[in-house]
Image (tube, rainbow, N blue to C red; front, side, top):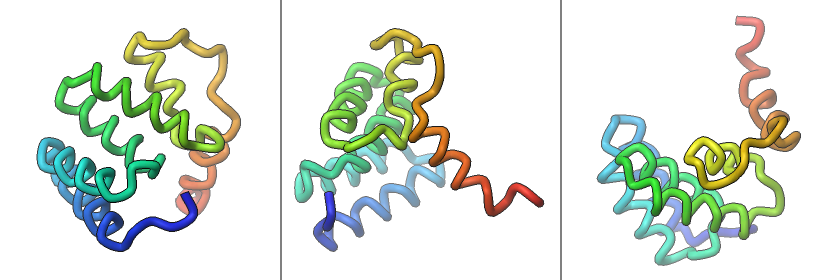
Length: 113
């Protein structure tokens, strides 16, 4: 998705803060509000799936990981491996290249530390 509604972004950002504070239940509500506004936002589906998994709602988590994969051009977030860890897909022999590259890019700035 190239642009997301500003209100949806605020809901998403607040959800991220709530989840970082350990309140996945509150984050779930906020992610859902963001997705009501921007239903094709792949990253929000992935984040909601993670929060749902935190609370033990693995069936709903699986559904949102699948939706992320349907919407995303490539799996940079690792939904394929998350589905495998939930037993909803076969375990891949290796992690997807796009996911590994994203992880590397995220850690590269802190690597020397």
